[in-house]
Length: 402
Ligand code: KG4
Ligand code: ZN
Image 1 (cartoon, rainbow, N blue to C red):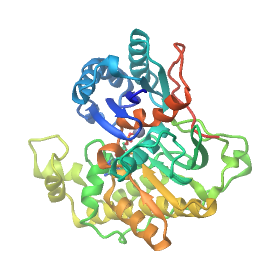
Image 2: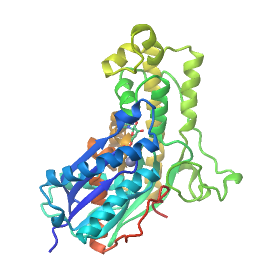
Image 3: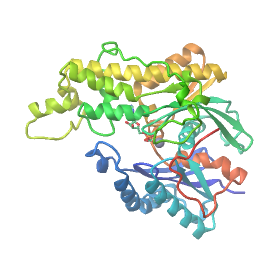
Image 4: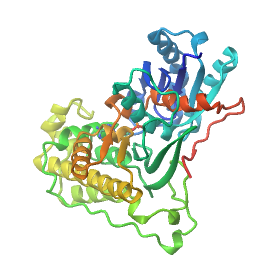
């Protein structure tokens, strides 16, 4: 009987990651080499630099994952790799290496959708923290259907996720029409003078401000006639046409960034970038620590940060709970980089308790990009024998669900 050991490889954006996961429920190792230092000075991910860094990191990262798991290539049952969505050149590094390893070892290759990987980060964490000693052999375990919110720097999607005999099925129920929520965090942080990625800065500073100080409104997205048949013009995954989705479950995060910018200009605010020039004249760098950032921000800037976060989290909550209710889902899975946010976790937990729904998050390490989630998502495919062949290529706009 196979031991169910899968090596996962992830290189879709700015993290080179490899992990060994057993039967989709036990992480033997999870190694993540972050490129944050490379991209930080540009305030965002530079695709060419990302590919170059993946090339440098992929071999040592995979070796480290095998060594930490105390597993040899010959012990593996399959190799799983992110096939999309993501940056084409970045994806290709992981795919090419995974193909070569699978071919050389005579192992099956499993192609995984990055967004599905994020959903499995929650399921993996649930299984690891559950008291069942023996992991289930069927993906269609006790997991009932769930509303999944995948919210990261590249995606803001709502799915109806349902366990089936042969794995999970996903139906897209909502999405952003423009920026992802994490992108809004990154852009607002950048305009206020903080480093990349912006989410952790805003998360840390928001608790010092008044969330009701500035009112940011999210209007209901209207499905206008001219949108019929169109798909959103975002860089993320291709999805159903907008008109097929309920407007109550559509997001838009590009406006709030502009609203923050306008507020800064109108109020002549001195955010960290401007203050920096005054208070630390010898330096042209963003603040290095949360304490330094806090000292640089006026109370009005802290109030702005808190209000921004409160509005974004409120909008994510409102639409997620409405979608769960309309689908009759009793469970909500929240995942992706923004799921690391402390206010988001606290408010989703409180609202779920109030509505008697279950809510689950991955661990903080599994919230952002990693390869354990890719290996976990591949487990049902190994069981059902759904493998990729050597023609596998990168699919930068790979869709998930119908
Ligand atoms: O999942 P991820 O690592 O990569 C993508 O697939 O995009 O997510 C990265 C995103 C970034 O936009 C980052 O600012 C955001 O997640 N993020 C956060 C927090 N930690 C990371 N946003 C809000 N609060 C956080 N604590
Ligand atoms: Zn991601």
